[in-house]
Length: 359
Length: 126
Image (cartoon, rainbow over all chains, first blue to last red; front, side, top):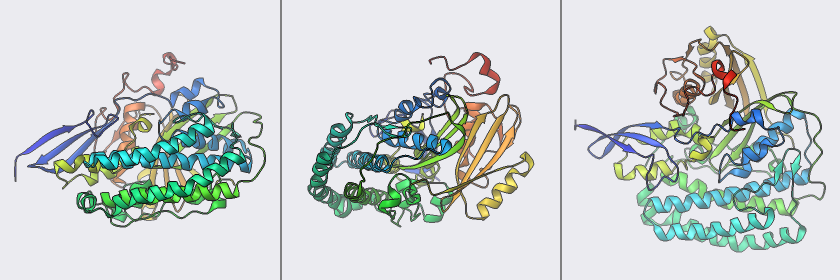
């Protein structure tokens, strides 16, 4: 047995836009153990619930993350609506779905670019982010914000998307999908990408499930679990089947996200086709008294907002379990037997979002 | 279009916790999360599980100094939540498979969510 050495990976590292630390125990160049550590930017946003009225906290919830911000607002609002038995208008559900899928699109395209950069494919990084810009343009046009939309509120949404804009978005989807499929073709079929990713960081279906993995990370190992299947927002009307791969390696995690880009485009197209006319919100009366575990499928997987009220305007507890926190155990299991040079790619393959994790 | 999932919560005694969790694991449930709530001088700890979008919640109520047995021997990934319980709330959890001993989540102040410090620490930035 070679002498073991420990190499610190992070919290500052070129492939990590946000700080997470791993102690990598190596024998020669091979990882034998990885010990994670977080908490460098813990913000205490859960505690802020005690000082913000329940209708105001949606602004805080949206700022938990700078990528899946809108979906945090949806998850929080949905939790309050379930506690207070608020019936959100159908049009608001559809608009939430459209903005959510736009968020998933830009998140996955962001990740695809970062992943390409992590494996040394700079041109692919630029192609991915160029496509992402067009999604951000749509978000800005329809909500006023590229990253923080601010359109979701308890009881519905704040803004409408007019028929003309929806038609324009619909027309843009076909050429956008064509460009995404061109991009996806490189990720899925390029020999150098396959050589870099296949067989790397393998986790089987049973192990992924037992470790509590969520999102594309779990689905790449064959776990057919996607919270959109429960039919929240407008997903119940639109119908949805999870994208699943079975090899459980970095290539499969990449393939799931590429195919989810196509699935999101299809969902937006169908949501625009089916969106009903009607009001955008309902008046919220009273205060929340009760508790609910609200769950939504974010780009990285299932997020949970546990909300609890006591009949006053301030909630007594908001506990947010983000998908990256749930995916840390599987990351720890992916790394042993990887080469040191492959560690950045394996870490990126779970699409870590430390901002969310450090809520 | 309400959320189509069932959520059930049942109380569990400290001495029954591991047996109940073993039963859920044998029944094919995955561990979703462990979360703590301050209920005024004590903690409510929610152990959440899911199988086919059926959400089951075991609710344990403990005092601030009560030692809670780890379930990481049953669900290996529980260590992230149990270290969080310790680092943010100060709840002692015994037998964690990867025990960071207070260094998993680095906070400027020790146990920021602890019930024992609530009187003088009311969310100062608000």
